Length: 282
Ligand SMILES: Nc1ncnc2c1ncn2[C@@H]1O[C@H](COP(=O)(O)OP(=O)(O)OP(=O)(O)O)[C@@H](O)[C@H]1O
Image 1 (cartoon, rainbow, N blue to C red):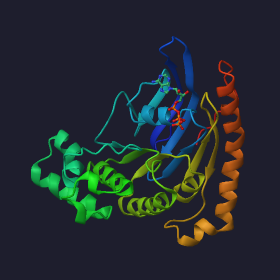
Image 2: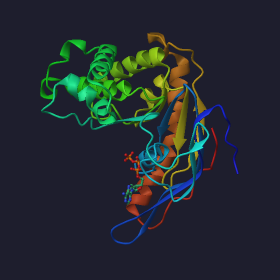
Image 3: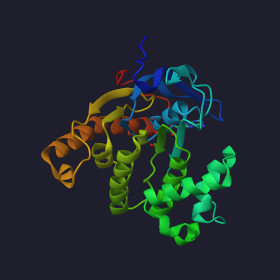
Image 4: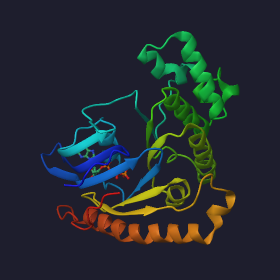
């Protein structure tokens, strides 16, 4: 059994997840996944559609219970959500349309019972951080998708979690907006020092933002490879056009390509699960 290091903010050890479908079939979404998330790192998860990236994220965050194996947060076993330590940002930013931007940011703090003054102060600080201080009294419908996603990030940050789990947060946005938001996110992280686990389908996003990129195999999801990104932060404009970046992105593409192929073939021939990929600890 793989060991859990104390330097890890979070760790999954031999995690397996099977779903029972409504038809009574069993879907093995994750198979023996072991992974350390290091304190302060930006870790991306990439893999073919349906390989279990979201499932792994939800299990790490205690939103879903794994079938077997263990998840720990700072060495303590995770048995449910821990909103004081772990926050979420989803692709669907789910702002309440009838609340102003600032009161959307305050929602989680309200749930937590934080006093009005502190709520407002934290919400303002985090709205400023994502560059939307001027929109505090606007309503969600007045903001673009990219701006709404920044509100969702401010909302998650205002709870001041140590770890942010982000599930394709920029997936619904156009390429230019997601590039800019990725850069914004990198800047915010620089300031806050959060640990991030980030699910994405964009290889460029993963390569640009991450300290390490976890490549998952076709379902049942396993860890196929973990690639470090040896580029110091903050990463300048030059990085995304450098040869090192291109090599990394191409490496990710090659690793993913055969898995996407396997996933597509499995979809075309249901019932024959892919058994490829090897368990590897990061
Ligand atoms: N509640 C559920 N019940 C049954 N099967 C599920 C459930 N949730 C997920 N699955 C299945 O588990 C597998 C992994 O799903 P998951 O959403 O974790 O994958 P993913 O890699 O995040 O996919 P995508 O990249 O398309 O978002 C898929 O085959 C999916 O159909």
